[in-house]
Image 1 (tube, rainbow over the protein chains, first blue to last red):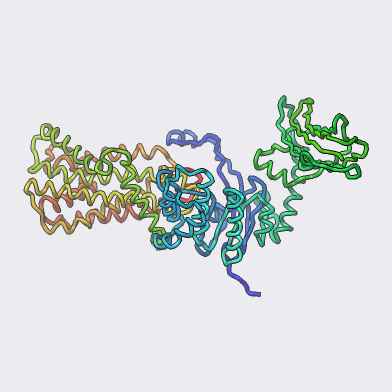
Image 2 (image 1 turned 90 degrees about the vertical axis):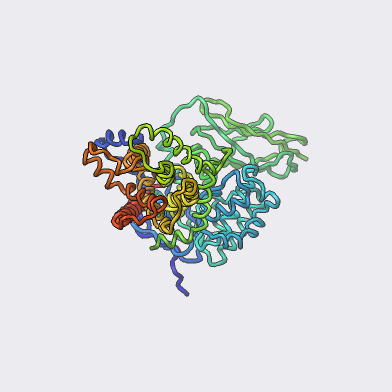
Length: 376
Length: 261
């Protein structure tokens, strides 16, 4: 097998952030606070060693605050390590934040020039690419309108098109796969696949694990500032999901259960769909999930006026990750999924209602959903 | 060396940034870019009205004398105030994208020197009106401007970086620049100093590189003579020291920009 060169080399890298509660801004404050205790440091990355070879498409995964975005910023040279070294070989572009340097008063076309020049392209190189960029963004005639008149979707499309067409050898992407509508997302995905199959090196940070499974040929899991696992994406992602559930269990045990007057919850019923039709010899399949910030929430399933008790609760690591990212510790229940197969043989023909309600520990209704189904 | 290579790679960004600096400053005002020429003219007008009454010995062709001092000085002050803030005002972009950070102060100073060259037309107009005339010494103007450019670049590099860590720097430097204005023969002539001036003050004015720079500019525009070679050498030395120190400080501090800004 041919040994490839490294595109990114990370050697014994450490990164700490200063934790400053009340940052001395002025000289006076700095002099006054000079004698106070030394600033505290929070270690974000510890002894990271990674080699990324040219042409690899690597996913960086980890929970919020695990340091994966910091690692990406270190690779772009926005941040610098406290110790250790990080070397990159080849032209590097980072898509950490789309539309950096966009000026709202200038037209889309002018902003392409400005944005691309930040990525280090010369006028000639931009001229050569501008048609590709405009075509990819599908903005059409809007390209000559000022960017401030764009919808946020158009803005993102333009920004993504510039970044992806820069033709870097190394591309660093942070959580931007959710740009635009489904159609544009698919297009971006295809472009990324194209880059992967070419000789580009791509490093992606994302929480859309299914996308990563499909796109990447290597995954690195950063856990509490260290490389926990590095290898085949499916294995690494599965191990990561396992750990999320384990951590969650440990967390909810340690959590001081605070009584609150008001809890927030969310519920979705995947099956049955409203107006589903089924016959007597079939079983009614109920499936969905419920998340709330109350640890002892109670689930109540009723068909018409009859309560159903045989409900299986299911671990759903995917939900925990998504909700933790959106609400930060919102989900306290480690088994948010529910599933049941209900015997409907005894029910009469006609329309029936199935309702799922979630009550908190004060017996207050958090949320409810209702579905109609037809029995024939 | 690698810095020069990188700056060359990012030349498009440098170019568009310089354009933005020149045009963007007076954006939205009625007279636009013209203000960068009207401003020094107006201050010359004020000095020309006020100072002849304050000073006993007036210089020949005081208006030309003033304008040859005020325009280089405006170049220095505008570049300093904008350059020092250049990292701070671009905080948003610094946190998100990598590019050689030197581009920010460099584009401010480059915009400044372009403005200065255009402003020199005003000096030439004054020279023509007041019959001072022109000579081949104008060929030395680019060299003098380049030396001033390097001094400004060194200072803005250093202070734009320090300004991120110590926010007071801006105010301290503004005060120093204000003092320097009176320590530089812009409004007065060095030879016009009365003998009562303490030797220490005179010495301060003499080690001020801008004193020599003003002499150089006036020799080019007004007196049509070669300035003492030691003045040139002194200014060149200061420029070199500023640039080296400025780059050193900037390189030392730039790694923390994204965290501190």
